[in-house]
Length: 260
Picture 1 (spheres, rainbow, N blue to C red):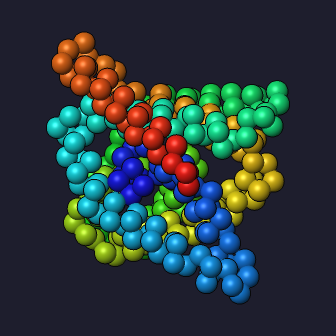
Picture 2: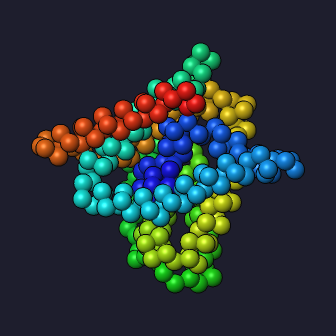
């Protein structure tokens, strides 16, 4: 999840769904302050996920960044395969027997919305921000709230939101430079966004499980359009197809685990 959140177009929420921890993660975050025992029941689980997320962002993100620089098409197709291969698992946990015509409408609305968002031209970014002012600190905090809120929802990439806000290079630069003041403000904003949206998603999954997953599947499929890099008809294209199949196979096997 940490590595995925560093890549524009790849959703950490989607990776959580693929690995079978999404519902449990949303429940843990939304239930943390539900009662006096909520934090005791969920703290250790969230610590484990948080440590993995942090290590992924700090360590694996560098590897992913290197792969995108050296083999962008093949790496992108690998992530696309991982996302596409999660669809059978998503359909399984969406309780398809409960589907009605309006589930299809919700699916199409969110699919179309994600495709339209994906087709928007990328904004030109200014240089990476390294010095904090009161105004820039407030902007980074707000960006953390918005990006992390998007990150919780499968199919929507927090890094893509930072790209839209013109702060993606600042985010990557802060990780590479280990800029603690900037990262600290971003993390505070992210924590607030994650808690708020997790409570909303927890409510939706409890009350409208199948309908919520119809929307999630639309977002996840729509994110493939955002990731599509085009394909070359040469050796690179062939390796990209194999990379896609490998990612899809990995996601399919993860979805077949007994605890998934």
